[in-house]
Image 1 (tube, rainbow, N blue to C red):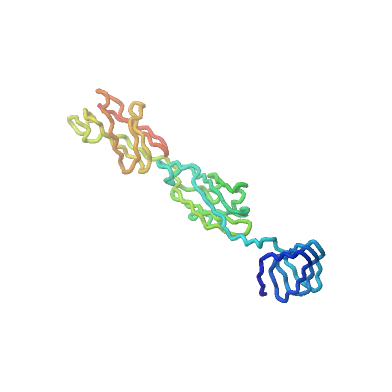
Image 2: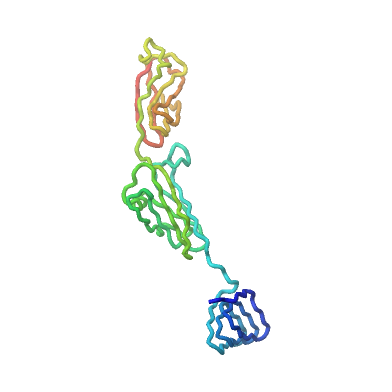
Length: 275
């Protein structure tokens, strides 16, 4: 079919007679009667204050005034960790897998599916029920386990999301990569460094050095706090197998050695004697 396009509204004060020989797209407005004397197709709209008469077998397809364009705008999906508990904000490391996000579109959100790229269930799961009226959505740990196909393991995970609007437009696939770490970190006993041990032996635990330097073995990336007699004296992010802490000289005599505590990923208590 070939249409003759003329989308300019035809405004007539009196009557209007359509004798078209080709299929035509138009918006017709008349103050009097409108007559169709042609079997051609008219695609558009007709507004008349008089009578509308068809003298031939004609097909009329009504269309709202203004000739609206089809919706081709795809929805946009954003998602992130609801609680990033890593040592640094936004590092994508968490002990809480809960996720929240938003679907934005100029039409109604008609679908949202999700799957884990490395999950036990390779199929997308319908999660539209999680989308609220404003387009926001969230997934609990249990809901994510259902999408994954089993309990979420510690380690790298990638959640994939695709949304669809009421016009059938699909969003670009969105991937949220994060590291789940629910295991408490290992933590070693503080060891006085040989350079700070000024006793007759570099392993006798006796020192008058200022400052005192201790090495603590901890999981790389964990945040470690050092306490002396219950008071916080230092903290650092473990960047190597052993993290070195420098503290002021302790009171003379036998004293409790510094006690390390890991943050974010568990707790532990260790003590040793120093003089």
